[in-house]
Image (cartoon, rainbow, N blue to C red; front, side, top):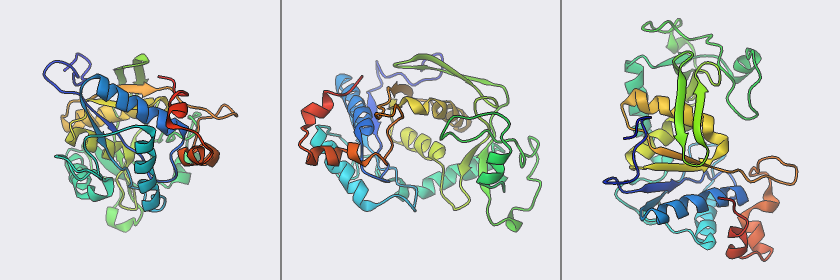
Length: 292
């Protein structure tokens, strides 16, 4: 392990990377670039690539999008060693089939006093924000339901039907890590991000919890993803520490933007891989657009 807590990806530890599509829509050029970079880093390291389907949102995730992602990425020229279509030693590779694993980790951190119940709605949190936050990022929680360390919640959980569980971040602690592309990164807990949702009131684990559990359980040594998730990395390193686990290395890819200069989202249907294929684009021509 390195001095900043990263798992080494050289020496005796074989490289294991991953790609993890979320089936809420068709994959676009931004997804393609990130997944291609992840696959190339795995192959250049002589390692393994894991495919994981992150389908925890019951309202938005669709089977047809999961199937389309598998087809699109194979067409793009990406192959993987483990995944929902080919199996492997770390199955299941579909998050909706791993709920009980996440639930056990929630109970563990409850017992350690590192998560607490919160009855604030999204509107309550938004209206209590005292500083601007990045578009799309979780607003900084003002601590309305946060009990003193070592004490129980200030309300009876059974009396509140809509309870989120939040991870208690250490106030004013600097969370630093070395990014494989961007170099040294640092965020301050309580200023750059606050106590974040760990388990949703509709009984769904958060992205932060699920990806940490999966990357640990699947032996991932380097996480390759978009640069818009740098702050998530800081949050997740706190979860790794809370669970006593070694953190993987991180490599945050450049973002692909549309003609408006904004990061691509799945609403940009014209730039989906499927649409580009139907318009006559080849896999080679799409890969030529990528920025490493």
